[in-house]
Image 1 (cartoon, rainbow, N blue to C red):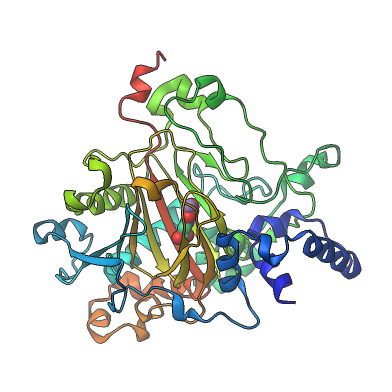
Image 2: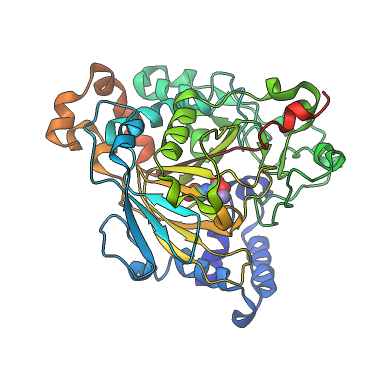
Length: 440
Ligand code: OGA
Ligand code: MN
C-alpha cells in the first residue's frame, strides 16, 4: 500500500486531471501494472530511494535527517556567513525592522547552493503572496489549467476572493468550461505525456543551434476527462503559473519562436516586486560566496514559475536546464507550508541531502548546483506560520500594524494558505547580449 501511495503522490496534479474516469477495478488493475513496472529496490537510483522516504504516507516519514537551518545546529559540511550589513537594507520590501541576524548558508558538498532562512519578513511575505495570487495566476501568464479549461480572463483568484467576500453571490461564481467539451474533437488526438517532469528536459546552452531551439513543440492536448468546475473550486487545482518568458512545463520547452522573431520585446515583463526581490537578494551575496567568480550584478529575471502545492502535491526530481545561460543563478522563494527539498548531484545516482524550506526562505542555485537534480517530495502539514494565518493568530505587534485592507482581505488568503505551499523561482534565460547578436 505504501508504494501505491508514493506512486500516486509523486504524480503531478495534471496527471490526475488528464486520466479518464475509470471503474474501481480498472483503476486497481492499472495501479497493479504500474507497481509491477517499478524497478526492484536495488535498481532504484539513490535519488529515488530518498524521495520514497519522504513520499511515504503510511507510516509518515521521520524528519530527523532533514537539515533544519531555522535552528542553527551546524553540521560539519555546512557553513554560516553573515550578510554584509550595508546590503541588508536591500532585502527590505516593507517597513519591517532589519534583522541583523540574517545568515547565508553554504554547503561544502553542494557548491553554489546558498540558502538564506527567513530572508523575507512577514509583512513583505503577505504582500508578495497577495500580488502573486491576484496578478500572476491569470492572463497573460499561462498555467497548468489553461490547456484544459477556458479560464476566465480575470483569473481564478478573483472568483475565489469574490465568493468569500460576497457569499450571497455564490450563484455568480462562474462555471469554467473545458476546452475538450467546446472542441469535441479530442477523440482523434493522441494523448500527450501527462507528467510535468518525469522525463529530463533536454540540456541546452548558448551553443545549441537556433534551428533546434525554435523547432515548434507539440502543444498540450486538452484532456477529455475533465469536467466543468466552479472557478473558486478550480483554484485548488492550480499547480503552476508561468512568469515572463513562457516555458510550457507540459511540453518542456521555452516558447522561443516569438522571441527569435521579435527580440526581447516579446518577453512579458516579470512582476516588478519579484524582479526586484530576486535582484536584491543576489546583490546581497558577498562576492566571495559566488562560485566560479561569476558576475550576478546584472542578473536578468526573464522567466519564472510559481508553484502552488496543495498538501499532497509533490515535485519529482528534475534538473532545470532549458535556460541558454549557464553562469547565472536560479533564485527561489518559499511561502506558506514548509517543504522537504532534496538536492543531489548531476546524476540520479548521487544520494541527495534533504533540507526544510520554510516560508520566507530564499534559495539560490548556482555553479555546479544550478544543473543538479532536485525535487520536493513532501509538504508538511501543520507548518503554516501563524503570521500567514488569520489576523487573530498574528503576534500582537503585527496585529496593531494591520491595515484596514488586511482586516478586510487577509482571511481569504489565510483560507487558501491553510492547505498550500507557494514557491516562486526566477531564472535568466539568455546570455548577456545573446538576443542583440541574433540578426532579428
Ligand atoms: C521548480 C522547483 C522547487 C520548490 O519549480 O523547478 O524546483 O521549492 N521548485 O518548489
Ligand atoms: Mn527546479
